[in-house]
Image (cartoon, rainbow, N blue to C red; front, side):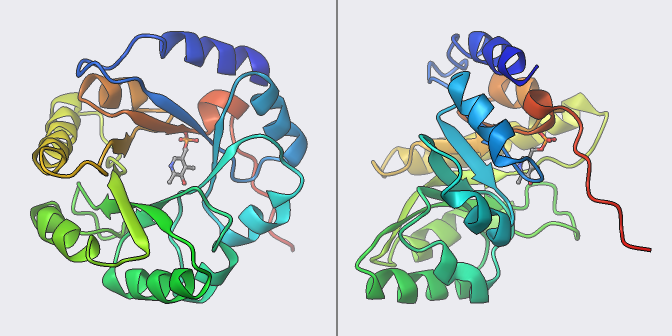
Length: 225
Ligand SMILES: *Cc1c(COP(=O)(O)O)cnc(C)c1O
């Protein structure tokens, strides 16, 4: 089933987005076993993303042949576990995190590839810079010598209103295009999950993060009674 899902999605992604860019598929692997993840890789996945540091670390040596992304909220006290191991951090959402990444990366003589997370729906439950501060955040964050800012990431709110979601997506694309004009390092717009990726790609996303669409519904371990 995993292999079938991967092949189907990859075939849909053979077509570029409306801006002529190829779309990268990142498998969101939270709660999945290393066997499931390796199955997805065997079927054609090149990029995998965890959203908890503990899972990132636990599966690190058990999974082979993919670029490693970190896509979840990153606590500063856990930054050290990603240094030297993570190909792209999607969730650079505050300056305090940038400070810690800079400190640790510099010590290790390493550069952290990062996306700036934007709270595009202004949701209290989500972190990230406000859309209106995106450009300013970029200008500040690009000064950190051991961070390489490669673009932006956003998670859309849950909504049935596709016109509203489209508007949010296009406003992300607008910021991305504005900054990309002068910044060669910026080339990634990470938007789209299982429920909304087609809309996101239509509006200019060039990286999507899919869990359920690849692996099926997530089953979280039952709470101990
Ligand atoms: C879990 C997760 C995804 C994928 O979610 P699905 O709805 O299962 O596709 C994408 N992005 C982030 C940040 C996630 O935590």
